[in-house]
Image (cartoon, rainbow, N blue to C red; front, side):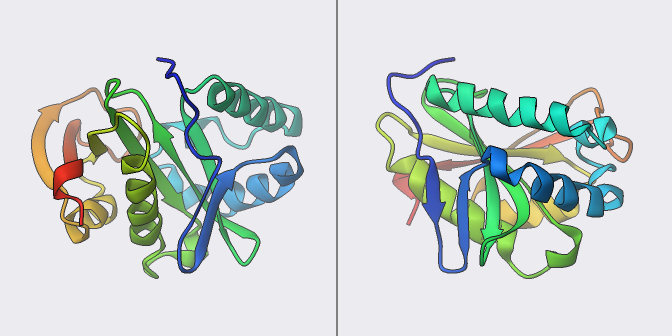
Length: 185
């Protein structure tokens, strides 16, 4: 779903920089993912495809750039002092006036508030984009760490619905959270 404009290529918060992955990041991204695979595989379907070959990861980054250049999804690296500690994105899969935020954090950086901080920053950035009225977060019911992020930020749990599991630890019940622009403080 293409939009008339492009989402931001970079968003900064107090401690973090979320910016589009660059081809120069290919090895650092591979390292961050590979070091976190045991943590990621239970809930991230894409982790089942890891480890990728270097050329596959380069093609993935090229694909992300093509999407963002056309006004579609933007996939960001999450950087702390220049080092990648996770990944996130603004995704258009929920409709033209809604952006969905997804996120993962490197296993060595869990429980330090980074997912909450990046989500706060991306939510603010999303609402600064013309036409966006809602930000959503979706995750499997068993992923209690992911549930903590929207809960802390005041998102509303709007729906629990069956969904085919895509990763090994998923229950098949998707939780859908939403924040309306008018409610974002």
